[in-house]
Length: 312
Image (tube, rainbow, N blue to C red; front, side, top):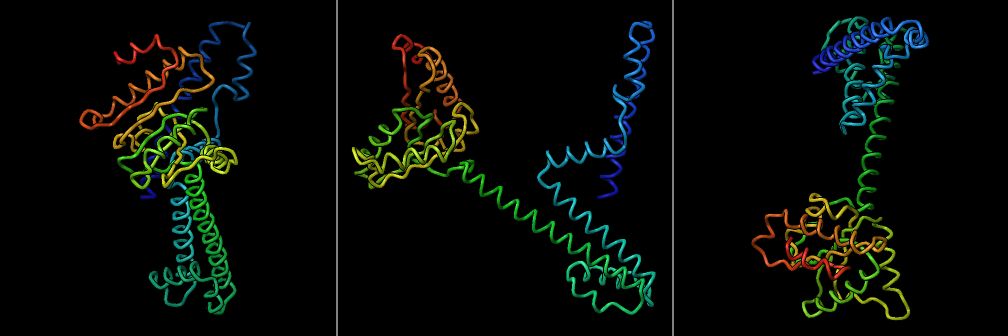
């Protein structure tokens, strides 16, 4: 697998180098046709500013590409480094040990990598102990990197949960799309309606920070005058664009009992209504809405645009 990957990378770099060489050759031809009034361009080409790259620059670019596009790049790099360390260490140990057994040398190299204390039992001899010490240091580095990768992965998952990026698995709930100054009053009315059923679930999807929305709700609940009462209703916030189908599915809008779409406060009436039209069209993209009894309520800022919503 490693050899196949390296071969594919070599072919890719070779194709890029050939394409770059053709582009530079064509550019030089164009410069020669233009004459001497563009000598500065020739100088730039001679200095390597028109596309010439070194092997290190290409290596750095490909490493950056894989680390930014693949979530398994760090794991693959760690496994590859482990394989190389064990392979090189086992080869050196096989040459240095008396039995010259490859399988025994591989096992010893692995024990040095997995357990740093094992190298204390290495056979006598400066060269063998130097190899054992080097493998052990490499193993300590590998496990340090592994702990760092695991902690970073857990930290990213926790941050993702804090930002409200996880999917909601609910049905027969209420979805509020957007957030404005009417949101808290709507949540209160829905909570009053759900009181007879012992409460319910309200999911708010807005293009705002999840922590900020939760802070606004907590402030309304703790208000001294006219505090917001949830009455057993649970309110869940998610950050995202309500106009995107993937975000609507993330809050299970296709299985909701009712959907309330709210316009933004900082838009003029016509622009806000145009966004609401797009919101209705985004909801109609769900095939599930065709056969259920989901109630959709849309905020209209200009009464003259009411016929437009009826047509949509």
